[in-house]
Image (cartoon, rainbow, N blue to C red):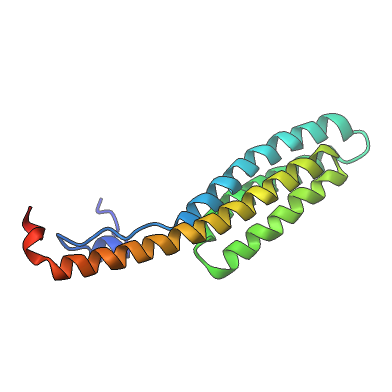
Length: 148
């Protein structure tokens, strides 16, 4: 069975430089993925502590759904609204403190990590664009050096 090729695979030609991946997206994905694990275990904690007060089905469904949404959000971080969705999820995680007070601290810590990752990722991405531009200028000015 033939496998469908992606657009990048169809457009690739020998000697083409590989497109650099976004550091901002990498950092943001890492934070969201780690949050999915935290939400899963926080769901189990709330289930164990509050199942007499809140429907166990509601606790488990909401927690597992939130974990899945956190992971799936990693796929849309390249879109403009993907980062905004990430911010909304940070607020949801902090709001989890109303069910388990420790989540106020955990949610705030992750929100700060998210902020740091986004800001530093943007900075690194800008530096990479500048580095690539300078490299391209050097290669254009020094074609004899390319054959080494």
